[in-house]
Length: 102
Image 1: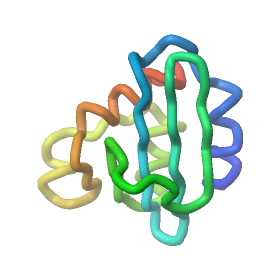
Image 2: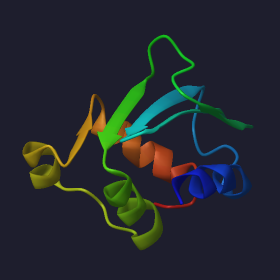
Image 3: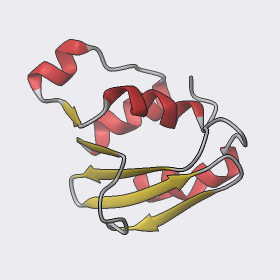
């Protein structure tokens, strides 16, 4: 399910949704993905392919799909409880914007 979601991301990429280039590393249980976006392109690769991602996100596959498919937006309580962890939660909003999921 997650692999399908990531493979379909490129199709929904919104050009010019981000200034410059941003890298995102997702650790979703056994699924590890790196997504790099710029104003004109999106690349998605297996594993961690950047030395230091701008944004790291760790959560369960189920919680990620709840955000992606159901439009749920994590609140402070989700971060405080450790349901989702990120070094830059505001960049997660930018990530969603890049795929029309604001």
